[in-house]
Length: 293
View 1 (spheres, rainbow, N blue to C red):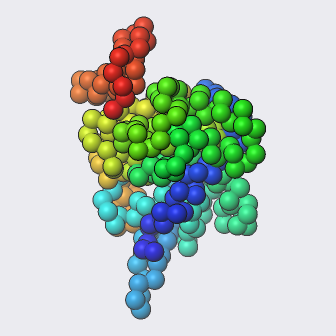
View 2: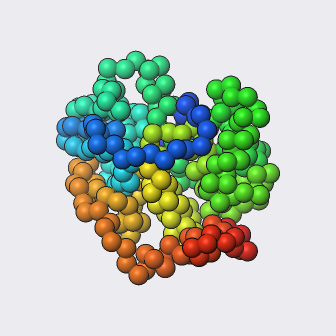
């Protein structure tokens, strides 16, 4: 496996197991003013290459408060996937310190790391990683089934989160019966069903067309407004600009950028497309007749 990549089976397993602390609908989450939910100091990661090594990350400093929406943007080979793997506890740094929810991850045993990851991180991947033989409802409830949630309760949670992402009425659809945008919405619902502290999205629009990408970004913005902490990994600067705050990465070095601040007219037009596609029209929240994406 090359540096900074995740094997497909690992990604499917991480997406399916989700996290382990769902108790119902995602509550409104107030912005924390205490210590950062993510904090990195002097982070470094190296991989062997031939007789030498390649430095995937070098002296990375990064902090993020609960409730923020941060995009990390960079081209292929910049180190962003390696950074995502470390944020998601799929890999460990060689240098520096990483605190997640106040815990120094270097001090945790493998079982404790897995437990922290399952309780804290909800993963969304570029290629959805849905199980083709399962319906949308079954895919979303899978993380709850793994930890023994009673079927009736798991079904109720799964239905609630499918409705939250605009897929009410499509619970029995198999992945091949859904569009790419709808499949990604199922994947987002699956990531959310465990009520994670952090939603970690790796190129979530990479397999989607431009219109559907705008819709999915609108969904992330909605989640952020509800208080969800979101980390977006992307190569697309225009999508990254929609986040509350951006950081660019190149040659393994991270540099903070500016927040998105005010919305442009184009942003507002994109927002309206998103709301219409999700089945709402106008301030009254009337159901639109068109299906999603």
